[in-house]
Every structure is written in structure tokens, then in C-alpha cells.
Length: 508
Image (cartoon, rainbow, N blue to C red; front, side, top):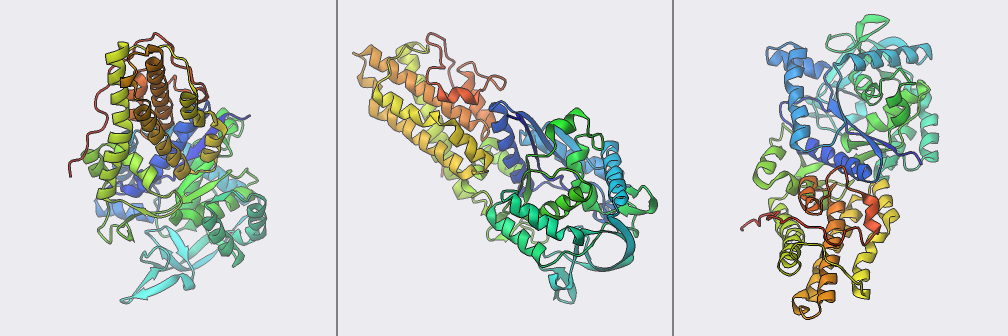
């Protein structure tokens, strides 16, 4: 079995301030990356910044800066965010890097050589904010101005010489590919949306601009720069040293296992990107997953609505692991979800402080008082084995992850936390002091439950779960998902560490 796993987030436009959408996509991708890593996979996890285009050029001019200096400053914000969010990314790419520019220009040459690009004139609506072209039926007028009906962004009329990509030629091959690869686009609603759009007919795509200068020049015509989305999407292979397809990184990790994206950029990833790759005779990624938006109330967060929630402020107030847990548990993956302070505080108090933190402290305190903080010997009864049994089905858990069933995974974790607390309460080890074998077995089983749950929680709340695993002498290098199915991984006689409060309750 191939034990390499390549996961990406979109490369982010370097806005002045990261928002909750950036944090959500990054945390989701990190969750999958960490799970695969503890399951023995060689993981390549890519994120980065998208730094070309008219939007960037105008932002730089507004700040009286050169575009590259502006990008250097803002990109650092996103690189710092990877550390603030405790991401396990193995690469951070910037589209201003030479390795990326080289890849994009080489892909362009391949498309030209394959007769996929021609020179003509573009006339139509363009959104600088979205870096996207729109048809007449995708435009609405408000107070005398034109806006995209899908994104709500302001559009402007553009007329200029442009190179075009023969997107229309790939309508039938794309539909055939979707049919033969039914899980290429997930969730199902996103796939249906894409198929419907393609069936309505694809028009050739303008893939160059001439009226501004900030971007990657076309190698055969330096008056034009390459359309920012053809540029940006190529990052997924430029990070693997394309066009050198014999490079170890490319051979090991392409095609990507999954692109995690927001649903607003689905068209670019599920139509344009596979069409570019098909036209260049390159393998397509295995999956594109378009998740929902994080809403503020019932509305998408946007600068224009002044309703952007700052993840850094929430982390400052509640802690990173609390935010990660909340987003993974409370947002139905694939659908829109919103941030609620009340639900976040309930998550901290109920799930993290009570169900997990309190379980760890109770069991460790009892072990210290009755077993000198040493893993005791044991003789399993039916009750003990029954509570451990659900952890044996590793393939079920793997299947949940491979199909991006985060919510079912989180429900399983919550059920196991509930079952573990119930087990310890029902067995009443404090009443078994005259039966040392039984007392020891209950303690051993409870410790083993904590170990297993903490391994499953590692992709969700890595910092806190590692604090717990540390008491068993387990660190990031020695976490082993396979050990979940074994119920006697704890060595009898080893000393355990004490544990501090993991999550403080929020006082209402």
C-alpha cells in the first residue's frame, strides 16, 4: 500500500488580517495530516500565499509600497499563523518564489505546445476581488453598480487583448472523469453543483492580462502576465518541483490525495484545475473537498459587512485547542457553520473540562492514592473488555477519515469519553479496596482508555493530548494509531507523571 499522503489548503491571498475562514480550512487540513501521520503515512502538507494579480498591485499602491515588499510583509502574517494554529505543514509556498515561477512558465509552455492556448480579445465582466470572470447572467445591478450574484463582489467591464485556454474542449472529458471518479468532488452537493455548471456549457477561459504588470510573465510574450488562477493553482505541483517529474517529491506525492478548499473557490479547483492538468497530460488530484463557510450569524464573513471574527482574539481568550475542538465538533463538515460564544463555552465546560479533563484527573489522582502512580497489574473481566472493544475497529476509523467523515469521528470520540466516565463511575474502584486485583484492573483499564482517547484526540487538540500522553512516556514521535487495538500497551510497573488541570471551566 502507498504510505505517502499529500494534502493542501488553498494558498491564501495575503489580506491584512487572517480571518476565521483561513483558520478553519487550515485546522481541518491539519487534522487530516496529523491523523495520517500517526497512522504511519509519510505526510506532505502544503499551505502558503497567493501573491500576484491586480488586487495585490492595487493594495500595494494604496499602501505606497512596491508589490513585492507588500507581499513580504503580509505573507509573514500567514507564515506566523501556521505557528499560532500549531499546524504541522511541511512546506509553505509563496507564488513569488523562483521555484513557483519556473513551474508556472513551464506549464504554460506545455499548454502552448499542446495547442491549448490562443490569442484573442477579452470583453466582459471581471471581479478584481475574486480574480474571476463572470457572464452576463451572473451579474446584478445595485445602486448603479454591477456585482457578482455568487460572491457579491464588485465587477468592472474589461476589454483587452488576452490569451485564451480552450476550456470548451474539456467539457465532455471532465464530465466523463466525474462519472468515472464519483468521489473526486465532495461533498455530494458540491459535485452536483459542478456537474450542473459544466453541463450548461464551458466557454474558453481568458488566461492572461495586459493592463497591469504584477504577475508571472508569459515566457513567449512578456507583454502579458499569466492569469492569477492559472498561476495560483500550479502551486500544488510547483511545491513538488514540477516540471521535474522525476524529482522524488513529485514522484512520491503527485497526484495529491486531497485539496481542502472553501466552497467559494470550487469552480477553480474542480473545473479549471483538472482541465489544465488534462490539457497538459498530467495526473489529476484524487479529491477536491469544498467545505462550507464559517458564518457570523446567518451571513458569510466579509470586510464589507464588517462582521469578521478574529481567530487570534478567540485563541487569546479561550486557547487554541478549545477553538480547534469547537470547529471540528460543532461545524458539520461540508456545510456552513457559525461561531457562537455560548456553544464554544459549553464545549469547553462539558466536553473538554468535564468529560476529558476531569476523567484524566480523577483516574490519575486515584492511581496516585491507591497505586503509587504506577501502572498496576490486571485481570480483565467482561466489563473491562466491553468498554475497550470499540477501539479495536481501526479500519472503521480509517474509513471515516478517508471519506472526510469528521463529524462521525468526533461523535465516536464523544461516545468513548462518555463510556469511559461511565465505566469508572459504575465500577466504583473506591469500593474495591478489599479486592486489590479488581481495583488494579479498573485503574489499568481506565488508564488504557485515557491513552486511546488521547491518541484519537491528537489530531483534534494536539497540544493538550500530548500533555496527557506524556504521562505515559508517549511523545509526537512515538504516537502509534495501530496500538489502539491493543489493550495491554501500558507496561505494568512503569511510573506515571502527575497531571495539571487541562481546561479551566468558564464561569458563566
